[in-house]
Length: 67
Image 1 (tube, rainbow, N blue to C red):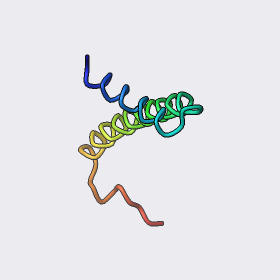
Image 2 (image 1 turned 180 degrees about the vertical axis):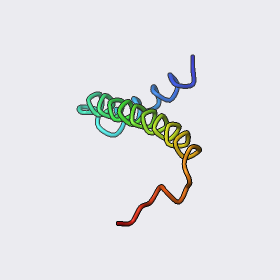
Image 3 (image 1 turned 135 degrees about the vertical axis):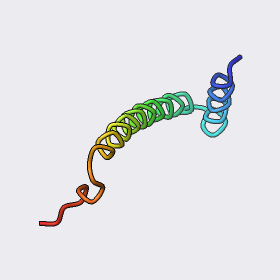
Image 4 (image 1 turned 30 degrees about the vertical axis):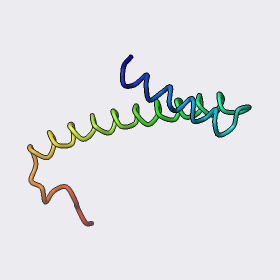
């Protein structure tokens, strides 16, 4: 059993323990949130790499321009 499966099972058991009637739907909601958070993290990480590449080609003082 993978570590991810162990944590998923523990989270499901916790949701059931807290509320046996809405526990399963709460579990699905939490999984959905984690998927969105992971996708957002990956997008931000990609933008950070692109931003670092752009910084190397510019003077760092050019990043903020006051007009």
